[in-house]
Image 1 (tube, rainbow, N blue to C red):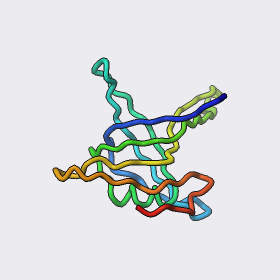
Image 2: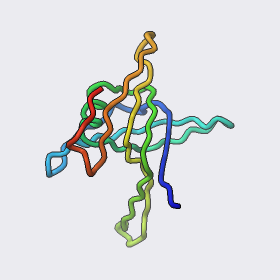
Image 3: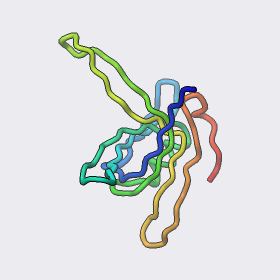
Image 4: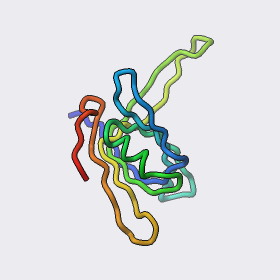
Length: 124
């Protein structure tokens, strides 16, 4: 059985960037700094959010905020100007959980949306 599932927890390295596709779907890109538990290394992971999830995330998240993301890996492939194959790996999020905002310890969940269902949303 094949499985493509990712779960990450980390802090935003910059403010979210919200944009609209040509067909009017909302898409938001974030980057997470994820610390490794066994050493002092940090991985920087690009994450893409769709639909209401993208809109709510862009509205409520800021640089430094802790989030948990659940989704799938996506590999992009292209050729550079010299004809060399290049690859990058990112995460397409199905769910995002906002970490505490301030000292209240309150967490929030953005509604799930995928590329295929980006126009549908589940309310908070």
